[in-house]
Image 1 (cartoon, rainbow over the protein chains, first blue to last red):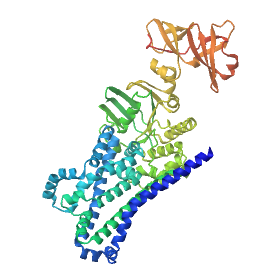
Image 2 (cartoon, chains in turn green, purple):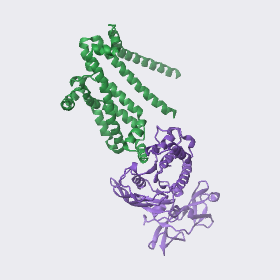
Image 3 (cartoon, rainbow over the protein chains, first blue to last red):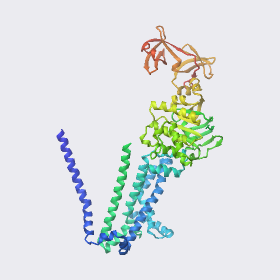
Image 4 (cartoon, rainbow over the protein chains, first blue to last red):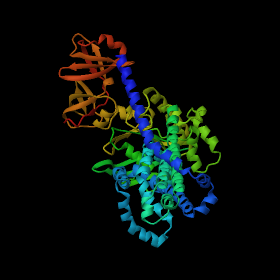
Length: 266
Length: 343
């Protein structure tokens, strides 16, 4: 009997490693190719970390990087300002609407970006009319795009605490609704807010379709443009962007781990 | 510090088709502790939440110290509240929790006051503990300290002990009574536990279907229940058939005075187990069916003809009351209520 179990364990272990190796090759090979290709020209990487020189040589790329970072930061802020109070309000006052809100927030996930753009184009005609054609106006579209991920993260954070009782306790102690949100709820869903923000940043940095089709600039659009003139540079920037996203996601899982371990200590 | 009077006037609140509050009137004197008692769904928690401002009334008025606060939001009502669920802010220590309300009010010497409140609930050495490092009883003590720290006009306790185990519950309810007497804050205590209500309150209000069935000191509620519902809900009762005549009812051959007058004729009396005496007697008309040991006292079920009678006896008598023993059942002549639901 013990032998059978041991053999089964060994089989499972071999299977696990096989899967890991195959998937590892699948993911790492393109990355390795990118590293190899982008290092063919010895000047590429030194140029990439030298910001003044980079923005001189590739002004479009520099503009794309800056707009993407601005878009990411603004989208994260707008998403939090919209979503945190809404999610709290739905939990406290309109629990019946939870399903509906969740469904609405998931919708962007089910609609292809192309379709979204077709719908957004006329809306953006007005946005351009009122706010100008700045790439920052993409923040509105991106806020909708990140809803599915951000709402899930924040809602999961809220279900970890007894929002209703905490809010009522704070209210009875004299707290206004703003105080309830800022000083009672937010500190207790900090890691959920962090993950929502990280996911938002990662998503916005990788967005191409909407920006390209609406004729706005961001990192991916400028990489694509650069690919036509300087292939090595565009691959190097893509790789850097990928690594940044990896780091963000790593930070995210670390934040999650820390929360779990502090809970285990209790 | 002395409390202020609270007056609930004709409060109405409807959830769908359910009348949680049906023209509820309640007057709480300054510094008084009133316990609202009733089965779940009787509206006792709704009454407390309307007073706290956490729930809106459909009609009626809430007066605190003579001032109409019906339209005031919860954060401007000046009430301290302890909840059934643990409600300490998880990211703050015990001391910071107590300081929370004080800081919102911009009080000076906040840490000193908060420490004094923790001392009052006997947790002065627990100031730097986080809620998850404390037991349920300790958390509720801190919640009490937090509620009292802001020197509220009214203290509201919404089943604060029901999540705790039996021993802590008894300890903490006595402590709540001690602290409330010491501080003198007008207090509304909501509970479904009759023992708790009788033990801590100056007056007990028994609620049913959104109305007060009886509001009286604990002893009166127990000994002279205003209605069959109260008699039934507060304490155990036997339902014994009898005949009413001349403001008394004859049950098992004994004439018992009535709490409220009733028309003559057959009726069902509600008799407390402790008002029933059981003694072994060879010619007794009753026979012991079961007996159960409960500690200081024991409970014996006796059949008398077709009727089942539950009696509370001293545990010392239990060995002589084994099942099958012939016994004589006598009723003490204390006032009883009639069960009107049967007739």
